[in-house]
Amino acid sequence: MMNSKIMINLINNNLNEINNIIDCLYTTTNSCVKNKLLNQLRKNISNLCMLVQGLQNSENTNSPQIDTIRTFTEAELSKYNGRNGNPAYVAVNGIVYDVTNNAAWGGATHFGLVAGTDVTSQFASCHAGQPILSKLKVVGKMVE
Amino acid sequence: MNQVNSNCPNFNTRLETTSVLVNKVIDGVKQKRIKKRNLIWLELTGCSGNIISLLDGANPDFKSLATQMVNFIYDNSLMVSEGEAAMEKLFSVIDDDYILAVEGAVSTKDNGLYNVIGRCRGQPVTAYEAIKKFGEKAAHVIAVGTCASDGGISAARPNPAQCVGIQNLLDRKVIKLPGCPCHPDWFMGTLAYIMLFGEPELDNRQRPVMFYSTLIHDICPRRKYFDKGIFASKLGEKTCMFKLGCRGPVTRVDCPVRKWNEGVNWPIGDDSPCIGCAMFGFPDKMEPFISYNTT
Image 1 (cartoon, rainbow over the protein chains, first blue to last red):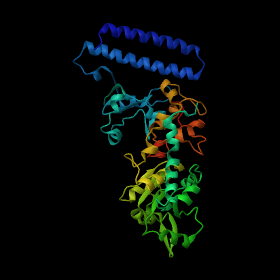
Image 2: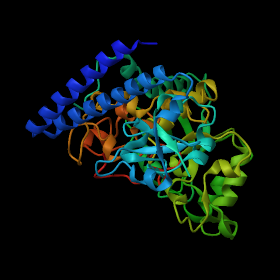
Image 3: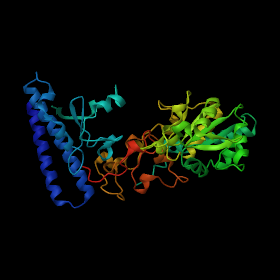
Image 4: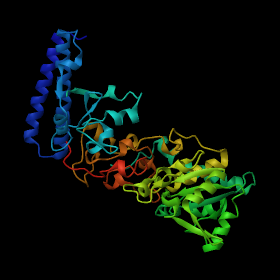
Protein backbone atom coordinates (compact mmCIF):
# COMPACT_ATOMS: atom_id res chain seq x y z
CA MET A 1 0.00 0.00 0.00
CA MET A 2 1.41 3.40 -0.99
CA ASN A 3 1.51 5.95 1.79
CA SER A 4 -0.60 9.08 1.54
CA LYS A 5 2.32 11.41 0.95
CA ILE A 6 3.45 9.55 -2.17
CA MET A 7 -0.14 9.43 -3.41
CA ILE A 8 -0.58 13.18 -2.96
CA ASN A 9 2.67 13.77 -4.89
CA LEU A 10 1.41 11.57 -7.71
CA ILE A 11 -1.94 13.39 -7.72
CA ASN A 12 -0.12 16.73 -8.00
CA ASN A 13 2.05 15.41 -10.85
CA ASN A 14 -1.07 14.23 -12.66
CA LEU A 15 -2.75 17.60 -12.19
CA ASN A 16 0.31 19.37 -13.60
CA GLU A 17 0.31 17.07 -16.62
CA ILE A 18 -3.42 17.68 -17.15
CA ASN A 19 -2.88 21.43 -17.11
CA ASN A 20 -0.03 21.13 -19.61
CA ILE A 21 -2.15 18.98 -21.91
CA ILE A 22 -5.01 21.50 -21.78
CA ASP A 23 -2.53 24.28 -22.71
CA CYS A 24 -1.36 22.21 -25.69
CA LEU A 25 -4.97 21.49 -26.74
CA TYR A 26 -5.60 25.24 -27.01
CA THR A 27 -2.72 25.66 -29.42
CA THR A 28 -2.78 22.57 -31.64
CA THR A 29 -4.75 22.38 -34.89
CA ASN A 30 -3.56 18.93 -35.94
CA SER A 31 -6.27 16.32 -35.36
CA CYS A 32 -3.77 13.49 -34.78
CA VAL A 33 -2.01 15.47 -32.09
CA LYS A 34 -5.38 16.45 -30.62
CA ASN A 35 -6.46 12.81 -30.42
CA LYS A 36 -3.19 11.86 -28.80
CA LEU A 37 -3.49 14.64 -26.23
CA LEU A 38 -7.11 13.77 -25.46
CA ASN A 39 -6.16 10.15 -24.97
CA GLN A 40 -3.34 11.19 -22.65
CA LEU A 41 -5.83 13.39 -20.79
CA ARG A 42 -8.15 10.42 -20.33
CA LYS A 43 -5.26 8.35 -18.99
CA ASN A 44 -4.32 11.09 -16.54
CA ILE A 45 -7.90 11.44 -15.34
CA SER A 46 -8.13 7.67 -14.99
CA ASN A 47 -4.91 7.68 -12.92
CA LEU A 48 -6.28 10.52 -10.85
CA CYS A 49 -9.49 8.59 -10.12
CA MET A 50 -7.51 5.57 -9.03
CA LEU A 51 -5.25 7.63 -6.78
CA VAL A 52 -8.20 9.43 -5.19
CA GLN A 53 -9.93 6.10 -4.62
CA GLY A 54 -6.73 4.76 -3.11
CA LEU A 55 -6.55 7.72 -0.75
CA GLN A 56 -10.17 7.28 0.27
CA ASN A 57 -9.67 3.55 0.81
CA SER A 58 -6.56 4.10 2.90
CA GLU A 59 -8.64 6.39 5.14
CA ASN A 60 -11.46 3.88 5.40
CA THR A 61 -10.10 0.40 4.75
CA ASN A 62 -13.25 -1.35 5.92
CA SER A 63 -15.50 -0.05 3.15
CA PRO A 64 -15.31 -1.81 -0.22
CA GLN A 65 -13.89 0.23 -3.09
CA ILE A 66 -17.10 0.17 -5.06
CA ASP A 67 -18.94 2.16 -2.40
CA THR A 68 -16.69 5.17 -2.92
CA ILE A 69 -17.48 5.66 -6.60
CA ARG A 70 -20.44 7.08 -8.44
CA THR A 71 -23.80 5.48 -9.06
CA PHE A 72 -25.79 5.22 -12.30
CA THR A 73 -29.44 4.74 -13.08
CA GLU A 74 -30.32 3.05 -16.37
CA ALA A 75 -31.15 6.47 -17.85
CA GLU A 76 -27.86 7.98 -16.70
CA LEU A 77 -25.90 5.04 -18.08
CA SER A 78 -27.56 5.44 -21.49
CA LYS A 79 -25.83 8.83 -21.90
CA TYR A 80 -22.44 7.10 -21.90
CA ASN A 81 -22.84 5.60 -25.34
CA GLY A 82 -19.39 6.59 -26.63
CA ARG A 83 -20.74 9.27 -28.94
CA ASN A 84 -20.32 13.03 -29.26
CA GLY A 85 -17.74 13.39 -26.53
CA ASN A 86 -19.27 10.93 -24.05
CA PRO A 87 -17.16 7.98 -22.95
CA ALA A 88 -18.45 4.42 -23.52
CA TYR A 89 -19.65 2.63 -20.38
CA VAL A 90 -21.38 -0.73 -19.96
CA ALA A 91 -22.87 -2.43 -16.92
CA VAL A 92 -22.25 -6.06 -15.98
CA ASN A 93 -23.72 -7.55 -12.80
CA GLY A 94 -24.43 -4.11 -11.37
CA ILE A 95 -20.91 -2.73 -11.92
CA VAL A 96 -20.27 -0.05 -14.54
CA TYR A 97 -17.10 -0.43 -16.66
CA ASP A 98 -15.33 1.96 -19.02
CA VAL A 99 -14.89 0.45 -22.50
CA THR A 100 -14.11 3.72 -24.31
CA ASN A 101 -10.69 2.54 -25.45
CA ASN A 102 -11.25 -1.19 -25.20
CA ALA A 103 -10.17 -2.66 -28.55
CA ALA A 104 -13.15 -5.02 -28.79
CA TRP A 105 -15.54 -2.03 -28.61
CA GLY A 106 -14.68 -0.39 -31.93
CA GLY A 107 -17.03 2.51 -32.63
CA ALA A 108 -18.49 1.94 -29.11
CA THR A 109 -20.22 -1.23 -30.35
CA HIS A 110 -19.45 -4.90 -29.80
CA PHE A 111 -21.10 -7.81 -31.64
CA GLY A 112 -24.33 -5.90 -32.07
CA LEU A 113 -24.31 -4.43 -28.54
CA VAL A 114 -24.05 -0.70 -27.95
CA ALA A 115 -22.34 1.17 -25.13
CA GLY A 116 -24.51 2.84 -22.50
CA THR A 117 -26.46 -0.35 -21.75
CA ASP A 118 -26.56 -3.21 -19.27
CA VAL A 119 -24.98 -6.22 -20.99
CA THR A 120 -25.06 -8.65 -18.06
CA SER A 121 -26.93 -11.45 -19.82
CA GLN A 122 -24.94 -11.17 -23.06
CA PHE A 123 -21.67 -11.19 -21.10
CA ALA A 124 -22.73 -14.32 -19.23
CA SER A 125 -23.64 -16.12 -22.46
CA CYS A 126 -20.35 -15.31 -24.24
CA HIS A 127 -17.61 -14.68 -21.69
CA ALA A 128 -18.47 -16.74 -18.63
CA GLY A 129 -15.30 -17.75 -16.83
CA GLN A 130 -13.05 -15.46 -18.88
CA PRO A 131 -10.92 -12.91 -16.98
CA ILE A 132 -12.20 -9.94 -18.97
CA LEU A 133 -13.83 -7.73 -16.36
CA SER A 134 -10.73 -7.59 -14.18
CA LYS A 135 -8.93 -5.77 -16.99
CA LEU A 136 -11.60 -3.07 -17.35
CA LYS A 137 -11.71 0.14 -15.36
CA VAL A 138 -14.60 0.32 -12.90
CA VAL A 139 -16.36 3.68 -12.98
CA GLY A 140 -19.34 3.05 -10.75
CA LYS A 141 -22.27 0.87 -9.87
CA MET A 142 -25.88 0.62 -10.94
CA VAL A 143 -28.78 1.68 -8.73
CA GLU A 144 -32.51 1.16 -9.22
CA MET B 1 2.61 2.69 -43.27
CA ASN B 2 0.74 -0.37 -44.53
CA GLN B 3 3.82 -2.42 -45.36
CA VAL B 4 4.49 -5.49 -43.26
CA ASN B 5 8.05 -6.16 -42.20
CA SER B 6 9.51 -8.21 -45.04
CA ASN B 7 12.40 -9.31 -42.81
CA CYS B 8 10.12 -10.87 -40.23
CA PRO B 9 10.46 -14.69 -40.34
CA ASN B 10 6.98 -15.07 -38.85
CA PHE B 11 5.40 -13.13 -41.74
CA ASN B 12 7.52 -14.87 -44.37
CA THR B 13 6.63 -18.29 -43.01
CA ARG B 14 2.94 -17.44 -43.01
CA LEU B 15 3.15 -16.36 -46.64
CA GLU B 16 4.85 -19.59 -47.67
CA THR B 17 2.58 -21.98 -45.76
CA THR B 18 0.15 -22.74 -48.57
CA SER B 19 2.63 -22.97 -51.43
CA VAL B 20 4.89 -25.34 -49.42
CA LEU B 21 1.96 -27.63 -48.59
CA VAL B 22 0.53 -27.61 -52.14
CA ASN B 23 3.94 -28.27 -53.72
CA LYS B 24 4.47 -31.21 -51.37
CA VAL B 25 1.12 -32.66 -52.47
CA ILE B 26 1.90 -32.12 -56.16
CA ASP B 27 5.30 -33.82 -55.76
CA GLY B 28 3.67 -36.67 -53.86
CA VAL B 29 1.05 -37.15 -56.56
CA LYS B 30 3.73 -37.10 -59.28
CA GLN B 31 5.75 -39.72 -57.44
CA LYS B 32 2.59 -41.73 -56.73
CA ARG B 33 3.15 -41.46 -52.96
CA ILE B 34 -0.09 -39.55 -52.55
CA LYS B 35 -3.35 -40.45 -54.21
CA LYS B 36 -5.33 -37.74 -55.97
CA ARG B 37 -8.54 -37.26 -54.02
CA ASN B 38 -11.97 -36.59 -55.46
CA LEU B 39 -13.17 -33.06 -54.71
CA ILE B 40 -16.80 -32.00 -54.79
CA TRP B 41 -17.54 -28.29 -54.51
CA LEU B 42 -21.17 -27.52 -53.75
CA GLU B 43 -22.47 -24.00 -54.21
CA LEU B 44 -25.51 -23.66 -51.97
CA THR B 45 -27.32 -20.52 -50.82
CA GLY B 46 -24.77 -17.83 -51.54
CA CYS B 47 -23.25 -15.63 -54.19
CA SER B 48 -20.54 -17.98 -55.60
CA GLY B 49 -17.95 -15.50 -54.35
CA ASN B 50 -15.76 -18.20 -52.88
CA ILE B 51 -15.24 -20.13 -56.10
CA ILE B 52 -14.46 -16.82 -57.84
CA SER B 53 -11.98 -16.04 -55.07
CA LEU B 54 -10.41 -19.47 -55.55
CA LEU B 55 -9.93 -18.74 -59.26
CA ASP B 56 -7.95 -15.68 -58.17
CA GLY B 57 -5.40 -17.82 -56.33
CA ALA B 58 -1.75 -17.45 -57.29
CA ASN B 59 1.24 -19.54 -56.24
CA PRO B 60 -0.53 -21.92 -55.81
CA ASP B 61 -3.11 -21.24 -58.46
CA PHE B 62 -6.39 -22.88 -59.37
CA LYS B 63 -4.84 -24.75 -62.30
CA SER B 64 -2.44 -26.57 -59.97
CA LEU B 65 -5.37 -27.57 -57.78
CA ALA B 66 -7.60 -28.80 -60.61
CA THR B 67 -4.96 -30.62 -62.64
CA GLN B 68 -2.27 -31.79 -60.21
CA MET B 69 -3.86 -32.17 -56.78
CA VAL B 70 -7.41 -33.46 -57.02
CA ASN B 71 -9.99 -34.90 -59.36
CA PHE B 72 -12.36 -31.95 -59.47
CA ILE B 73 -15.60 -33.89 -59.81
CA TYR B 74 -18.21 -31.18 -59.49
CA ASP B 75 -18.66 -27.46 -59.34
CA ASN B 76 -21.70 -26.01 -61.05
CA SER B 77 -19.93 -22.77 -62.03
CA LEU B 78 -16.86 -24.34 -63.60
CA MET B 79 -17.70 -27.74 -65.05
CA VAL B 80 -18.39 -28.31 -68.73
CA SER B 81 -21.34 -30.64 -68.13
CA GLU B 82 -24.67 -29.08 -67.39
CA GLY B 83 -28.16 -30.05 -66.27
CA GLU B 84 -28.83 -33.75 -65.73
CA ALA B 85 -25.37 -34.75 -66.99
CA ALA B 86 -23.69 -32.60 -64.35
CA MET B 87 -25.91 -34.01 -61.59
CA GLU B 88 -25.20 -37.56 -62.77
CA LYS B 89 -21.51 -36.82 -62.38
CA LEU B 90 -22.07 -35.47 -58.88
CA PHE B 91 -24.03 -38.51 -57.74
CA SER B 92 -21.57 -40.91 -59.42
CA VAL B 93 -19.06 -40.51 -56.55
CA ILE B 94 -21.46 -40.60 -53.62
CA ASP B 95 -20.24 -44.05 -52.57
CA ASP B 96 -16.56 -43.34 -53.30
CA ASP B 97 -13.94 -41.45 -51.31
CA TYR B 98 -14.32 -37.69 -51.70
CA ILE B 99 -13.61 -34.43 -49.92
CA LEU B 100 -16.54 -32.04 -49.82
CA ALA B 101 -16.10 -28.28 -50.05
CA VAL B 102 -19.24 -26.25 -49.51
CA GLU B 103 -19.87 -22.57 -50.07
CA GLY B 104 -23.08 -20.81 -49.20
CA ALA B 105 -25.48 -21.39 -46.34
CA VAL B 106 -28.37 -23.85 -46.45
CA SER B 107 -31.91 -22.62 -46.91
CA THR B 108 -34.11 -24.66 -44.58
CA LYS B 109 -37.57 -23.10 -45.02
CA ASP B 110 -40.19 -25.40 -46.62
CA ASN B 111 -37.73 -28.32 -46.67
CA GLY B 112 -35.16 -26.25 -48.50
CA LEU B 113 -37.32 -25.61 -51.55
CA TYR B 114 -36.06 -22.01 -51.85
CA ASN B 115 -32.72 -23.27 -53.16
CA VAL B 116 -32.77 -26.02 -55.75
CA ILE B 117 -29.23 -26.71 -56.97
CA GLY B 118 -30.19 -29.01 -59.85
CA ARG B 119 -32.43 -31.82 -61.02
CA CYS B 120 -31.50 -35.48 -60.92
CA ARG B 121 -33.58 -37.98 -62.87
CA GLY B 122 -36.36 -35.42 -63.11
CA GLN B 123 -36.45 -34.68 -59.38
CA PRO B 124 -35.34 -31.34 -57.90
CA VAL B 125 -32.30 -31.56 -55.61
CA THR B 126 -32.36 -28.91 -52.89
CA ALA B 127 -29.29 -27.52 -51.14
CA TYR B 128 -30.77 -28.99 -47.95
CA GLU B 129 -30.94 -32.48 -49.47
CA ALA B 130 -27.49 -32.19 -51.08
CA ILE B 131 -25.70 -31.22 -47.87
CA LYS B 132 -27.43 -34.03 -45.97
CA LYS B 133 -26.55 -36.64 -48.60
CA PHE B 134 -23.02 -35.59 -49.42
CA GLY B 135 -22.06 -34.15 -46.04
CA GLU B 136 -22.62 -37.35 -44.09
CA LYS B 137 -20.57 -39.53 -46.45
CA ALA B 138 -17.59 -37.26 -47.21
CA ALA B 139 -14.13 -38.07 -45.88
CA HIS B 140 -13.79 -34.41 -44.84
CA VAL B 141 -16.17 -31.47 -45.04
CA ILE B 142 -14.78 -27.96 -45.50
CA ALA B 143 -17.10 -24.98 -45.09
CA VAL B 144 -15.64 -22.41 -47.47
CA GLY B 145 -16.56 -18.83 -46.60
CA THR B 146 -18.68 -17.24 -43.91
CA CYS B 147 -22.10 -18.33 -45.22
CA ALA B 148 -21.20 -22.03 -45.11
CA SER B 149 -19.38 -21.60 -41.79
CA ASP B 150 -22.00 -19.64 -39.92
CA GLY B 151 -24.90 -18.59 -42.16
CA GLY B 152 -23.23 -15.30 -43.03
CA ILE B 153 -24.94 -12.86 -45.36
CA SER B 154 -27.43 -15.49 -46.51
CA ALA B 155 -28.65 -15.79 -42.91
CA ALA B 156 -28.60 -12.05 -42.19
CA ARG B 157 -31.77 -10.40 -40.86
CA PRO B 158 -34.57 -10.94 -41.79
CA ASN B 159 -33.38 -14.27 -43.25
CA PRO B 160 -36.57 -15.05 -45.21
CA ALA B 161 -35.31 -18.44 -46.44
CA GLN B 162 -34.23 -19.46 -42.89
CA CYS B 163 -30.62 -20.07 -43.86
CA VAL B 164 -28.14 -21.73 -41.51
CA GLY B 165 -24.48 -22.71 -41.67
CA ILE B 166 -23.83 -26.30 -42.74
CA GLN B 167 -22.73 -27.41 -39.26
CA ASN B 168 -26.35 -27.00 -38.10
CA LEU B 169 -27.38 -29.84 -40.41
CA LEU B 170 -24.44 -32.21 -40.05
CA ASP B 171 -23.70 -34.43 -37.10
CA ARG B 172 -19.96 -34.50 -37.77
CA LYS B 173 -16.90 -32.26 -37.67
CA VAL B 174 -16.86 -29.49 -40.28
CA ILE B 175 -13.62 -27.59 -40.92
CA LYS B 176 -14.60 -23.93 -41.14
CA LEU B 177 -12.89 -21.33 -43.28
CA PRO B 178 -14.88 -18.15 -42.62
CA GLY B 179 -14.17 -15.08 -44.73
CA CYS B 180 -16.23 -13.17 -47.24
CA PRO B 181 -14.88 -14.48 -49.48
CA CYS B 182 -12.52 -17.21 -48.28
CA HIS B 183 -8.95 -16.47 -49.35
CA PRO B 184 -7.70 -19.01 -51.95
CA ASP B 185 -4.66 -19.73 -49.75
CA TRP B 186 -6.84 -20.69 -46.79
CA PHE B 187 -8.74 -23.27 -48.81
CA MET B 188 -5.83 -24.68 -50.81
CA GLY B 189 -3.58 -24.84 -47.75
CA THR B 190 -6.24 -26.66 -45.75
CA LEU B 191 -6.96 -29.10 -48.59
CA ALA B 192 -3.25 -29.78 -49.12
CA TYR B 193 -2.73 -30.38 -45.39
CA ILE B 194 -5.62 -32.87 -45.35
CA MET B 195 -4.08 -34.76 -48.28
CA LEU B 196 -0.66 -34.84 -46.62
CA PHE B 197 -1.41 -35.37 -42.95
CA GLY B 198 -5.17 -35.54 -42.39
CA GLU B 199 -7.14 -32.99 -40.43
CA PRO B 200 -5.15 -29.87 -39.53
CA GLU B 201 -5.03 -28.49 -36.00
CA LEU B 202 -8.27 -26.59 -35.41
CA ASP B 203 -9.22 -24.00 -32.82
CA ASN B 204 -12.31 -24.24 -30.61
CA ARG B 205 -14.47 -23.00 -33.51
CA GLN B 206 -13.07 -25.57 -35.94
CA ARG B 207 -10.89 -23.11 -37.87
CA PRO B 208 -7.38 -24.18 -38.96
CA VAL B 209 -4.90 -22.63 -36.53
CA MET B 210 -2.35 -22.14 -39.33
CA PHE B 211 -4.53 -19.38 -40.82
CA TYR B 212 -6.84 -18.28 -38.00
CA SER B 213 -4.50 -18.06 -35.01
CA THR B 214 -4.02 -14.30 -34.71
CA LEU B 215 -6.32 -11.33 -34.29
CA ILE B 216 -6.06 -8.85 -37.16
CA HIS B 217 -5.50 -6.17 -34.52
CA ASP B 218 -2.40 -7.95 -33.21
CA ILE B 219 -0.62 -7.95 -36.57
CA CYS B 220 -2.12 -4.76 -37.98
CA PRO B 221 0.44 -2.34 -39.44
CA ARG B 222 -1.57 0.47 -37.78
CA ARG B 223 -1.40 -1.09 -34.32
CA LYS B 224 1.14 1.49 -33.14
CA TYR B 225 -1.47 4.21 -33.66
CA PHE B 226 -3.95 2.35 -31.47
CA ASP B 227 -1.36 1.98 -28.73
CA LYS B 228 -0.60 5.71 -28.89
CA GLY B 229 -4.27 6.67 -29.01
CA ILE B 230 -4.07 8.24 -32.46
CA PHE B 231 -7.39 7.51 -34.14
CA ALA B 232 -8.83 8.30 -37.55
CA SER B 233 -12.00 10.41 -37.42
CA LYS B 234 -13.00 9.78 -41.03
CA LEU B 235 -12.25 7.38 -43.87
CA GLY B 236 -9.05 8.08 -45.75
CA GLU B 237 -6.94 8.91 -42.71
CA LYS B 238 -3.90 6.72 -42.29
CA THR B 239 -4.18 6.11 -38.54
CA CYS B 240 -6.02 3.51 -36.43
CA MET B 241 -9.68 3.14 -37.42
CA PHE B 242 -10.85 1.73 -34.07
CA LYS B 243 -13.06 4.77 -33.40
CA LEU B 244 -14.71 4.30 -36.81
CA GLY B 245 -15.77 0.82 -35.75
CA CYS B 246 -12.92 -1.35 -37.04
CA ARG B 247 -13.52 -5.03 -36.24
CA GLY B 248 -9.86 -6.02 -36.48
CA PRO B 249 -9.69 -6.46 -32.69
CA VAL B 250 -12.37 -9.18 -32.73
CA THR B 251 -11.52 -10.88 -36.05
CA ARG B 252 -9.08 -13.74 -36.07
CA VAL B 253 -7.38 -14.27 -39.44
CA ASP B 254 -4.15 -13.34 -41.23
CA CYS B 255 -5.31 -10.71 -43.79
CA PRO B 256 -2.70 -8.11 -42.73
CA VAL B 257 0.10 -10.43 -43.80
CA ARG B 258 -1.49 -12.41 -46.64
CA LYS B 259 -3.51 -9.60 -48.22
CA TRP B 260 -5.67 -10.14 -51.31
CA ASN B 261 -5.45 -10.21 -55.11
CA GLU B 262 -2.02 -11.84 -55.11
CA GLY B 263 -0.89 -9.93 -52.05
CA VAL B 264 -1.63 -6.46 -53.44
CA ASN B 265 -3.73 -4.93 -50.66
CA TRP B 266 -6.37 -5.47 -47.99
CA PRO B 267 -9.18 -3.31 -46.55
CA ILE B 268 -7.19 -1.49 -43.87
CA GLY B 269 -4.35 -0.97 -46.35
CA ASP B 270 -6.87 0.91 -48.46
CA ASP B 271 -8.12 3.08 -45.55
CA SER B 272 -11.29 1.11 -44.91
CA PRO B 273 -12.01 -0.42 -41.49
CA CYS B 274 -12.10 -4.21 -41.18
CA ILE B 275 -15.79 -5.20 -41.17
CA GLY B 276 -15.16 -8.57 -39.53
CA CYS B 277 -16.16 -10.66 -42.56
CA ALA B 278 -14.17 -13.64 -41.27
CA MET B 279 -15.81 -13.52 -37.84
CA PHE B 280 -18.76 -15.58 -36.70
CA GLY B 281 -21.82 -13.35 -36.53
CA PHE B 282 -20.96 -11.42 -39.70
CA PRO B 283 -22.71 -9.36 -40.96
CA ASP B 284 -25.41 -8.63 -38.36
CA LYS B 285 -23.16 -8.65 -35.30
CA MET B 286 -20.42 -6.68 -37.02
CA GLU B 287 -22.69 -3.75 -37.87
CA PRO B 288 -22.46 -0.81 -38.02
CA PHE B 289 -19.56 -1.08 -40.46
CA ILE B 290 -18.74 2.58 -39.99
CA SER B 291 -19.39 4.88 -37.02
CA TYR B 292 -18.85 8.63 -36.85
CA ASN B 293 -18.88 11.05 -33.90
CA THR B 294 -17.53 8.48 -31.51
CA THR B 295 -15.53 9.66 -28.52
